[in-house]
Image (cartoon, rainbow, N blue to C red):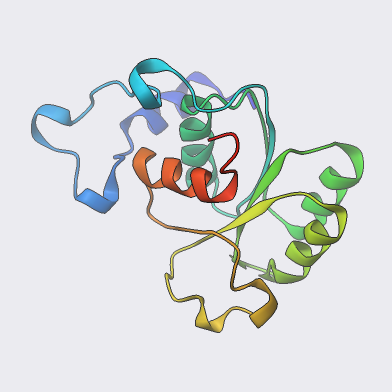
Length: 161
């Protein structure tokens, strides 16, 4: 996705690394670097991000690009996600659990049926409320940073991460 300069300026000012606390002091505003001294952990993957919060989706996109992902499609609804899967081939997907219109669990089962790996993204770390058949799916807890995304991708795609 291509964003306007004002959006890029805004997103560059959004704190990252939230799990460790606020970005203040020496690291505040520091430019981000790709994982492993500038080398991405993946190459040429097409990823679908289903997230109803644009800011969170853009943060995920930024971190995925640092990880070496070249093509990222962001959708904000189940309808858009279904259309994207019908139109394109994806290497994996990130699914926000709670969407304004419900949950992504039904769509997750569809991804299982068509063989697209995926992981959940949620502000809640307790998977006990997830359906039993989906509790084994990797979970990335919001807010997340580069390290959390890297560990999540290693669980999601152990052969390529």
